[in-house]
Image (cartoon, rainbow, N blue to C red; front, side, top):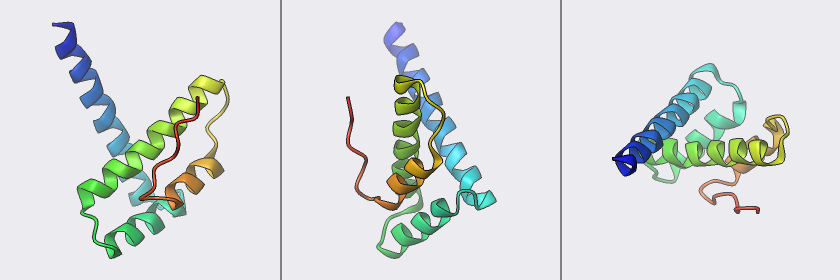
Length: 92
């Protein structure tokens, strides 16, 4: 039963992150989000793939923020977005 709940939690977290990315694209904030989306579209990525990649970058920044007990670093997040499709390194 707990394994099923873990999967539901993961699915909810992923859906929440993807919704956040969609909100960023719609609002144009940060501007890097739309620029990166357009770049990845041009090189042949599908919308779902792009949203998942961008959500992974957002998850990485949120995780680092919590781990390091610091505020969200917008500049760091935008830099990581611009490096897609290369994902951020896991810093431990």
